[in-house]
Each structure stands twice: as structure tokens, then as C-alpha cells.
Image 1: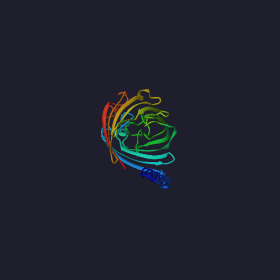
Image 2: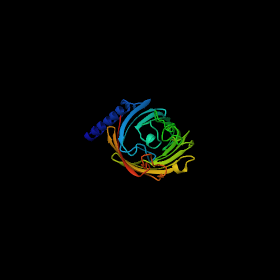
Image 3: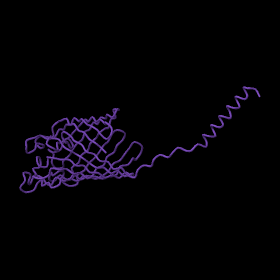
Image 4: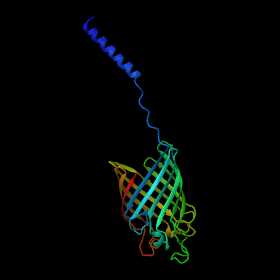
Length: 264
């Protein structure tokens, strides 16, 4: 056999050996199964706590925290806590400096890139005596505690959400059925940065002067290891005649808010 033939035969045998080895190689390890649930905690601070464009801490800082439990099925539960001042400064209560929200719902992808989120949330202000006899808000407000159901749809970067109050809304008398609709977008800028434009409209049923539109633009940075920061420009067309508190502060003004959060 000539040298060239021997070399060709050796190459063929080597290739056959590689192919046989590839066919009998051990399969890749399977991917780790999705956990049955995830539990996340967060704590943070903001220079001015704004809810739907309205100051909740009389334009002063707030310390906040929360816990979120998410099940593999799409069900979730969570809580959020923050100090507040509007219960006393706006509703005229003598008690009530803590907000404690409890929420739960179900989130699922209906079709590719389209997610539905439905749930219930209760805004609780432990010990608040908003509207009680002997307070400045007596006869003008009811208890501030509020319950809402909500439904949201997310398609790509856009989210449209509707919230509906069951009972009086944040202590406003005869305001059951008040609602809020908002549209936002999550724009990924890369390198951990994101930009979120938002516009919403709060309708307070039977109190036209209390209804308003709010808007914001939030720049966020994920620093890694659970740390993130935000810078938000926030504004509204809320009317001073309604949203001025007992201290003479207009709590629906335009402002800039900075925040920091640690999630673990």
C-alpha cells in the first residue's frame, strides 16, 4: 500500500473514531428545575414619597420596605411599608403615620410577549382616625384605608393598568368606584440603565375637583448585587384648591425625586 493510501486510511479511521465517540458521549446535564417559589425582600429610601403624583410625606423623605412571594404557577403575594404624613396633614387625623399595603394576584403570559396581571390590593394605615369626631377632618373624611382590584396588560415594553376602588378612596366621602388608569413603558438603555415614562389619570368619583392627571419620567440604574437607584421627574395637574393640606402645602406640585433600594 502506498504512503498516500495509508495516510488516507488512517484519517478515515480517526474520523470514524471521533464520530463514534460523539455518538456515545454522555448527554449534557439537564437544566436546573424552576423553583417552586421565590421570596425577595427589599428596603429603600426616597427623598419624597409620591403616590400617583401626590406627596405622601409632605415632601419629606420616606423609608420603605417590602416582601414578595412569587409561586411557579404565577400566583403572588406581597407587602409594602412606608412612613406617611398625609393622613394627618391632609385628612386632618391625629393618628396614622404608617402605610402598610397587602396585595396578591395572578400573572401569566397569555400569548407570546403579552402578559396579564390581575389582583387585589389593600392600603392600610394602622390606627388612623381620619374623619373621627374631634379631628380637623371630622365630617369631611372617612377612614383612609382603601381596597382596590386591578388588571394590567403588558405587551413588549408597554404596560396598561386599571385600578378600581371598592369603597371610599383614601378617606374621600362617597367616592366608592373611583378609578385610576395608567400607561407606562420600560425602555432598556443598556449597561444597567432603564427609562420609564408614565402617564396616569385618577378619577375621584363624585368629587370632580379631586380628579387629576399625573406624569413622570424615571431613570433607573441597576448597580448589581441587589443595589439600584432612581431619579424621577414627577408632575400633575392636580388642583391647588383641593390638594393643599392643613399646613398650606400644595402636595400635587412638580418635583424631582431620588431613591435607592437594596433587594435581597
